[in-house]
Image (cartoon, rainbow, N blue to C red; front, side):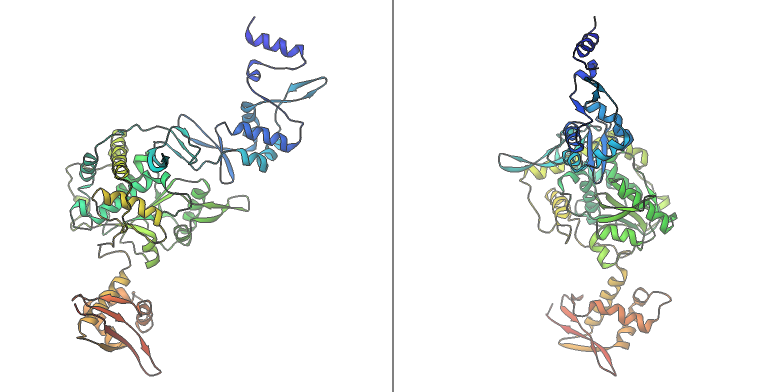
Amino acid sequence: MSLEKKIALIGESVGIETSITDYAKPSVLLTRPLNEIAGELGALAHRSQLYRQGERYVTVDPKTGDVRGMLADRFCSFAETLAALVKPGGDSVRATRMAKDLAKVVMASDVFRSRVRELRGVNRVLLPVWRECDGKRTVELLPEGFDEVTGYYSVDGQLFDHELDPDEARSYLMEVYRDFPWSDAAPLERNRDFAAQLAACLGVFCSSMIPASEDRLMTIYSANQPGSGKTNLARLALAPVFGEIAVVNAGSSKSDELNKVLDALMLERAQYLVLDDLPDLRNPKLNAMITSPMQSVRVMGTGTTETVRLEAHMLATGNLIRLSPDLERRTLAIDLFCAGDAMTRAFERPITKTWIYDPANRAAMLAALWALVRFWRDRGCPIHAEAYRGGFEAYASLVGSILMEAQFANPFSPRTATFGGDERGAAITELLKALAADVSSGTHDYDSSDVYTKALAIGVLDEIVPSGKDPARTFGHALKPFVGREFVDARGRGFRFGRRETRSRKSYPITILSDA
């Protein structure tokens, strides 16, 4: 007689219908008070592949890391994998099924919710994380499966060398990126734009080390012409960790269509967002996502909203993207400049989508990034004060210090490009320096017409007064944010820009503060 048959006969002798599968699981009586049912199922779910993400429940496939939402109709059958569901049947209890209405209220119960583990994210590669060892803070790779400390679920889906020599890692990274047309003309090891690209890569690789409460910088790739390699650089930042990358063509999307895409990505807790061919950053929703990651998102078709904290890595590409001073602070800009025709460039080793997504190349990139992190860890995790960006301190300090310890440039130093960015601000700064050059010492008052004439003479007026705007109104308004600020002129002298106004006259004093 089979074991299953023996168990069934034992069950019959005591008035319980059972099977070998049920015998190995605890029983949950579905006629008990709701909180007791929810508590028991929640305790059992705590040891299962069920997790909560924000307001929703999800399961994680332990082999692939795929995340699937858990709704009430699916929970009816999922509950049977947790326990034998029973109800009274005469003088005994009998197996039963969970009704959808009961599943819905169980999942909505605070008791059930409190016992289901919170999932911060799923990693399809092993990523670094902070750990405590003998009272000291160190860095290790996350283990496979769910990590109770961080809330990350990890699948070792991309094996890589955990012991690559840091010097070999530096050489490999410079070899991969040497042919990109960085706007900064400095050698790669001191190149600010190259360092910013590595910061984008490390920001993704080290995401488990950055607290959920900390904001992340959006990475902007801006070039002077198409074909410069912007999109491939975005892929290189993400592909080692995420594999093949989905890209949103922002250039052909209408504003309302783009808004729907952004809402959907936030509700899905997307791990990254790539906006390709972005014409500008004037989309209100996108600006809100950059400036305030905590967003209230409307759930399509329900009339309800959900508060979501955006932890996605946000990247955008475009040609000559202009940034306001506020967005300049909230983004990490990487500038590319091709003097010739970008589409006819020749490469010793072309970096294509196929090359980027190749498993061997992904593994090599992961090994190089981990080598940089290990090198920084083994040197005591030193913090470089120059690796700083206000409002993004944890992010900038971590990735910037890792790179600077490896003798790369500071990725958060000022941009070197003369195109894109805050071009109006750069033009006004150039104008003020030109005015200061004509002041020998002390203070000189420039009439507003003199300032306007100087801007015209040095060729910056078009940047300060956009086409179609009234110069009489726009010019003075553009200068207002610079009043009271201090600058350094071409001779190394400090000076202050001011403004005086009476009923009959407006003037702009330039005061020399120090000698060269």
